[in-house]
Image 1 (cartoon, each protein chain N blue to C red):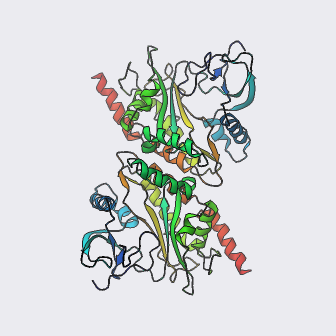
Image 2 (image 1 turned 90 degrees about the horizontal axis):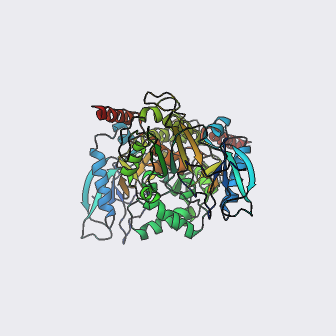
Image 3 (image 1 turned 120 degrees about the vertical axis):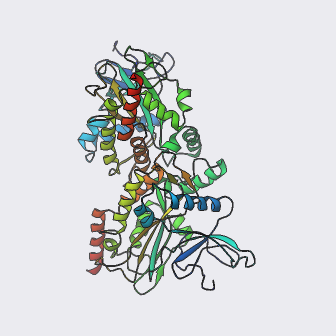
Length: 292
Length: 292
């Protein structure tokens, strides 16, 4: 138990502290997410239980794109040491990455399940309109990039919330850049976004499933991108690029209908100017210009 | 001019009458749509002008899926004979069909352009949540089916607005049925939805374009389906199946982003249980059962 600690690479969601519940990692590959208040926690737990056991979810999809679910565990928390709190036990998606560069991208123009009460819809809608969700079909909720020397670039949340479409594109370029500060050289674009096992290839595989699956609607879920800044090289070798779905407190049943909202956002991310094959060449061009 | 008359097959939108503006047809292949009030009419005209001239719209897409635009024309109206009103001159999409069976399907979970003022968003959102738009990514705005004897089935608008997901599926089955009243035999499912040139095949071609195009976002536009109930046969010959986009008063500029909202709804329509290959077989099964 003593080796449980807040994950240092977390980019979105609540962080554990003396007066706040937040996720913990054990350093050996597990991630403990405290059940959220209200019915969100129960809802997310119910999703993991249903999803883990669902006979029609292809194992390849479950294993590649979702954290493995290991049940729940009561844990004392820093906030209330005497009162153990239930946690979801999940795979630590960033385990094994020495210097994780991470991006949390909330998918969908609509982030509220259709059955939500009016005040919740109004609150989400204001956020969806105030960020790029409605325009782009996704928004960047968190990002952390490790530069070669170890310096970490990590914009604050208000800065991310204020991003417009051009700003989101800039962050997606910054995510694959090796410079310090706000600059971009996109030196890692081909290695991280392109190629076999790269982000684009994984997103396309995910898309093929979303064109068919009618089991779940993933409102307000995120795609978490990760790679190892210490292992990746511009040549494309290594890097352990990961594409994972996270945050399932607002998943709704599909009832035989595809998740058109997530699918639309996912297609928009795939087609993003920074991510496309053609545009990746442009980015590599930008990397070359930097050397001249 | 004297042969201008309201189209008898119109299933959605305003109808021309003594005190209302509505579209007219001339019986020789043209459709006259009065410019809508406020900035909607100007907006739709601007869209047609931009779209018609846009160098990067593939001619095949423009010719197959959009009404051809022939400019505008001032016409006297029944409502105000002394005060000519500007009309968009478009192809009559149902010209040549002797007994048109028509469905108007409004695409997208979101029907308001992102730049809309708050009260308009609230009004659209209430409709989107009150119909199947948010859940299904589309709703049926109008439908008219001609039975073999010539009897017309045409539910009223309040009935269509009240449809839930199951109701929409039933209407899509009814659209390809040859019975009178509310029943379904789905006798025309394979002929209308399936096969080369059928609805599904055309929707898939449209989808391929929407996965790429970043020019326009078609908020609140509809897909109009049409076939000739007198020419179609269960064997699949004839029928002149048409799939067309209509209603462009709320189109927004794409600014390099795909229309994830329309694309998502389109994918949902393609994947509808009544429309898919597998389900079409089921429907043919249902037709066979009727004969036993």
